Length: 102
Image (cartoon, rainbow, N blue to C red; front, top):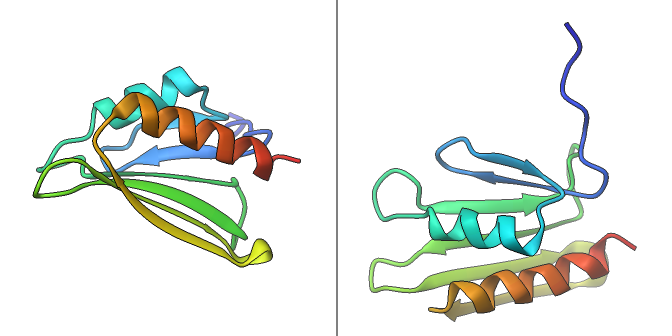
């Protein structure tokens, strides 16, 4: 039995085990929508490789909303924001991820 095919660019993994290769904006929206404060508190998006140069994560905040972390060591980027709109998060991440895949 062969293993799974690796993502072309990146993959998203949530704490509860959800895995999506090359997630679309709609898939990111769903992954963030499924987050909760008990057993699925974060999702991480990164290249499907050992020691990736960049990642983005979204985590549920106890006070409400989400903490978004974007880090790219090759571009010396490290950004942390807080957002409450899942649509805004998915859109912003999609745009940021598009610049990583080039």
